Image (cartoon, rainbow, N blue to C red):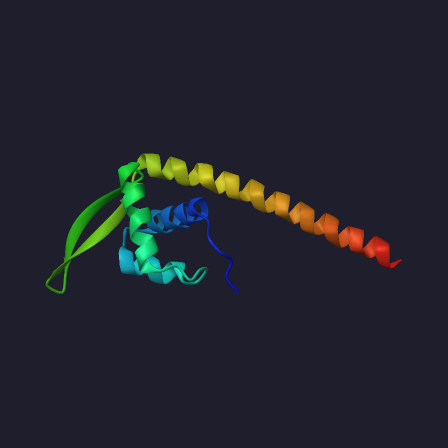
Length: 111
């Protein structure tokens, strides 16, 4: 099951992938498909926005006679990833508390 990605979560995931290693668009889209049904047409505007915000640098590299556009995380991109990751962890903690509270409330009603 996949959950819809909001733009901020999509940004975090893309930055995390690029932080692991420089990547090209198709490679990123294939990795993103593990958690979403993201279309390539949605990915490239996000990559462009990340570049415009100086979170990633873009460079070309030859591959089988063609140029591939690669994305490399910048120092400010690493800082943004760390910030978003902290926000994500706080969010999932809050969701976990709600789920736990909900399951506790459900147990009380059954007794």
